[in-house]
Image (cartoon, rainbow, N blue to C red; front, side):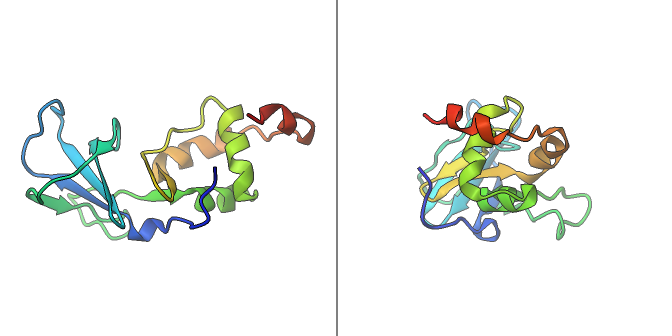
Length: 140
């Protein structure tokens, strides 16, 4: 189900935890949007809700603002991806179901999912358009 409220990726904050986290040998991120937080592997894998005190962490800047040696990280919302593909955001669910190579979201907030921008940029040139006659077969 599509949320009425579109996620603004500029309001999503990504932080690198500075202390080790059990079960995440390569480090962990906290990804926050409004009143929700998720703990993930670095890069966004294996999200789980995060509740707790504020552990020591460092903000990860967006790619355009990151200064070496730090690496930036950008996110895309459903609406951003649809705009880049020049399709209606509602059609994006059809694209997700029809293309096994479509990246999984990093996390899914109450207002919807967000994706790693680099993963979407790598996938986009490989996209196969969905024929109008096939769209009906993708409905749940």
